[in-house]
Image (cartoon, rainbow, N blue to C red):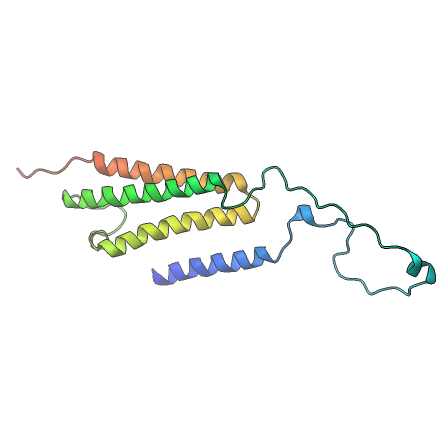
Length: 168
């Protein structure tokens, strides 16, 4: 389990570092050579030319936005609230004597460990959203958090809706 988590963080770091080295396709000059070319023999006419005025920066694409904008902040807060609700509902489930479906009962009964797993799930959701943001998939970036909110809240509702077993 630790190796899988460490591998996930390593993969996230590698993808972020690789993506950080690339320029967005919109900001590249289509006339610029892909590889620096050696200077040709300069003629006196070339030396008398004045340098061209710098081109105006290309405006960002309409779907582009800052990662920590207001909408993402609300979505990430929703993911955290959904995970907190899942945490509380799962502890309630265990107090009523019902077994957890996805994790072992020993993990859920170890409250610091279970809390850490819930925090890691929230961080993973933010990380996946960031990967989608960096790769230009802004709709998927938003949908990742929205789906995570729905799944966590739906799981909490299910946990609270289960009937408590009564001894006969």
